[in-house]
Every structure is written in C-alpha cells, then in structure tokens.
Length: 586
Image 1 (cartoon, helix red, strand yellow):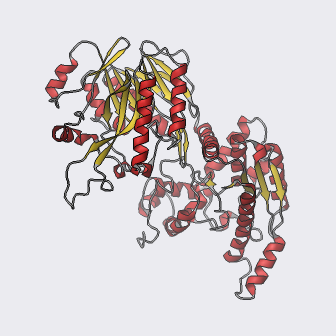
Image 2 (spheres, one colour):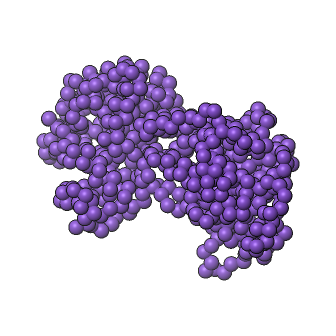
Image 3 (spheres, one colour):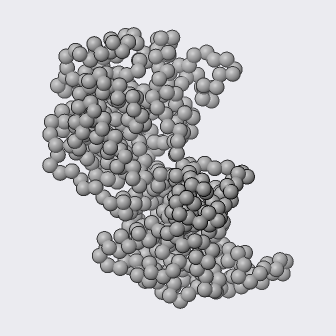
C-alpha cells in the first residue's frame, strides 16, 4: 500500500492559501492509496484564540467539505476541529469555553467519497511547555458520554477503518462497544487502519497503543510537533518501539515551516516492525510516498545538531518574513560574534540586497571591531552603513547632566549608548518598512546582560534560545561548511565585550560562558535547585548569584521580542514565570 505524507508548510489562519496548497498536491499525485496531512492541517497549528472565532471554525468546515467533494476518489486524512453540542450546565460548571453551546475537539478526519466519513479524537491534550490545548479543546475521552446522551453521531474511544485494496470503508459503531466486542470486531476479514494525533503517540496505553493491541495493520499519526535540539531522537525511539511492539507499520506525518516562535522540522517517518523503512527530508516541504511493502533505497542521512540549528533558524527567519510580508532586515553590527551570526543567518534566509547592517561605533569602540564588521558585511554581500554615535552620545550626556548627574562609566552611561543604537535601528526600520533583528543570545537574556529599548529592540530575537557557547560552536561550524572564513576569524577568537566602557570584557561581570551556560541549563531546563547544582561541582555562591540574576530579570524578558524555540525549555511561552515574586533560594 502506498501512503503519501503531505509534509507541507501551512500558515495559521490562511484557509484559502492552505486549501490551494493541498489541492495542488492532490492534483499532482494520483498513484496512492491514502494521503495524510498534519494535525489541524487546514487551519494551521497552533491557531490559539482563533479557535474562539465561530466564523473561523465554520469557514474551515466549508473548505474541508469542498476538499472532500473535489477529490472523492481516494481517502484524505487530515487534522481538523469538531464541534459537539454541550450538555446543559449550571452556573458553576466551568467546562465550557467562553460559554459556547458546544465543546471543541481536536480530531483527525477521513474525507472520502465527497464527505467526512469519520474521525478520531485526540485524548491527551498537552498543557506543558509551549502547549495549552485544554484552553480550547476537550479530551476525546468524554466522547462516549456525548454520544449516549446527544445521539449526534459521535463515536466511542477508537474508530477502526477497514482497508480493502484501494477502498476505505468507515466502520462507525452503532453503539459504544465493550473491549470484548471490539476485539471480536478486529478478527474480521480485511486490513485495519488506526488513526491518532500527535500527543497520543507519546502517551503509553493511549489511542495508538489501544489500536495496536487490537491488531491494526497500519497506524497513522498526524502531528504538529515543533523542533528542539534532541527531539528527533526521542521521536524515532517512540516510533521504533510501537512499530516493533505491535509488529505493524507506523507512519508519522509532521508539518514543516515556522509559525511565530515555533519551527517545524518535518521528518515524517515510516517504521515497520521496529525498522526504519523511510524518512522524509528535514526542514523542507516534501510529498513523501511511503510504501508499506518495501524499504526505501535511500533514507536521508541524519544531520548533526549544528546543521539542524542552522536549518531551523534560516527557515524561521525566511518564513516569518514571507508570511508577514516583510522584505527588509536591519541588524546592528558590532563586530562581535552574536551580531555576526545573526547577519549570516539573515543572509542565508533572505536576499542579501534586502539586508542592511548598521555599524555604530561609540566612544569606547575598538578600531578592529569596525573593521571586522565591514569585512563580514562584504563577505556576506549585505549593505552596510557606518554612523558614529559619539557626538550624539556626548550631547545626550550633556543634556541629561543639566538635570541629573551621571557617573562616568556607570551602567546608566553604558545603557545610553545601547539605546542610541536601538533608536537609530528603529528609525531605519520605520523608514525602510523593515524589521530589526536583535542579536542577544540566551545567556545574556537569562542574566539580564542586555538593555531595554537598546539591544533588546527589534522584531525577532533570532538567537535568544542559543547559549553563548552554542553561538561559538555554530560560528565555527558555519565557517567549516562554507569552506572559508566567511565569519572573520578575529570575531570568533577575540574575547567577548560590549565595548561600553574602556577595556570592558564580559567576564568582568559574568562567570566564563562555559561555566555560566552549564549552570543556566541546570536551572532553566532541568529545574535544579542551587544545592543540586552546587553538588555538581559549582561554587554555591556563584550559583546563587546566577540564579538571582535570572529571577530578577524576568521583567526584561517579558518586554523582549520573541525568539525561535531551539531548546527543550525556551523563554516566553515555554517558561512562564511571574515578574513579581519573592521566592529566593539560599
């Protein structure tokens, strides 16, 4: 049997555009038995509060029906939403979302012969990290209750479908079945298809595992699983184990592309009896044909983590610009490693002609920093301008000093320079109709080593989920794959400095980055306490100092531009902490 995985790049809310994209795929690909698209494919994931708009849900239903009627010959599997009438509730019942007269379910539908012939609900609704599905959906576990009372066509726990040659027939239950009745049902003739949605694959004993126990011949999981470093290996282990455990074919369909802070890597899979049969490309749109009878002669090679990060970030930048109709990008080039990486990523994502680097040397900027930034700009083929801010800075200080005395080399004085630069960048962005790509990394963002309305100004914080040590690794990797020093070697080798006062070095205020980043990972990603971190060989006084910096700078992060999720625990939606809180570790 040939199953097509529609690994497409959808845009949230772009129903017409997404519909046309699906139609184009269906028109060009005729030789298949089943075609599957990702979770909430037509509306895009995550739609967030668009799901509160009844007009949006109604319009999505119309497009799905239109799709079913236009391509009735073959079964189309696609993620969608289903409204089910709610039971009467009393005023203390909080199960309804916004008092709507229905409950909403995250489902995977089967379109066939001009209509929706059935669907499978999602049981496990994630609420961790960047997810909050219980805000919008009800769990499929309660569908039985609504079927019994409402008689509105809902079905029980799982929906088996028979596969006979190229025909797919819905076997919707007339009444909810017992486990024994379902087991007998599966002993009939023909082949059986089990459907599930994203999170249910990750939870043992959930939908696909129930289907596996009953002996289905093919499991298809439609997902919208965003990328982070190391996640692919976890997915592969899950798919391998379930296909081996139930001696069956498992096909996993995932989207590709960026949606705000989330990046989808694609990598749809076919596993059979624990063996990888085929896999689609990473970070690329692809219509992948999986053949359940044979293993592919070519399975794409797994990229290393540096390559993954490079592909993820370039995809994130290009998609954000395309989907939001931006053309021009502005970057403040300091001659340091962070702005160099951001400029390189931008030039690999956009037309270099649409990128402008602005060099803004001040009273404490070194001559080599300007030269390094100019060399980088020429290497990348992007435009650059040099605006010396010394006179602006001196006039600024003189004006303020009439009312408030500012101490020489103080944080206030340093921040004034950063804010002048931020203002210049934003002025250029306004005038050119572009957006500023801010250049702060995760290490700086974590401990507040950044300036509000200065270097934090921008539309996207491109590397805000990359620790400083990872930035250096990525720079060296990029220079290696380009086979020449596209990032000037001096930028990589010189000690990091903000150059906001004479002879300033980052290590004057912070621990060495290799140490700082390890502590930050333990605290932010592993949720370890100060005691637990210090037991790993770190000085406790230093650990407490770092933790205090992380906690007290939440207010800055709340005002920073969004960044792309690249680690298991990113700032923003992935780590929601109160700004005002007085819990202190000792």
